[in-house]
Length: 144
Image (cartoon, rainbow, N blue to C red):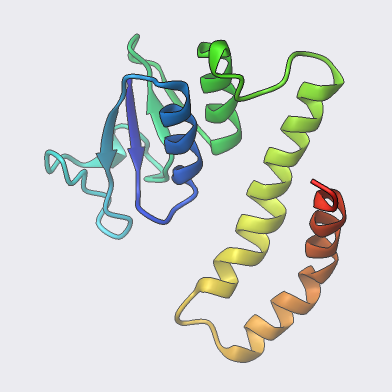
């Protein structure tokens, strides 16, 4: 399988999951600006037209995108690694947290806060607007 990733992007979570699972994978680095695969110079948009990582291409040639979906695929493909919980409410809670991280924290908070071109006033506004999300996360992690 092929994992398309960019350093310091959310694709790191998938890389960690594959490492933890002991999975055989080709790691293909994508330049986030040019969308060129650094390993071979190809245009990444031929694999994922949006040009977003992570993108996983299975050994069957199927392409899967979105971190939450890919992480659950990896967990199901390598159950011996115990990356995820079983079915039912525990698995639904895992899905809930993956979506929360991907939407509320990553897109809603971290991307604007880490944008080098964003004005300080905007960053202050975004942080203030998202404090409740950070408090929610903090409360969920207390005692763990």
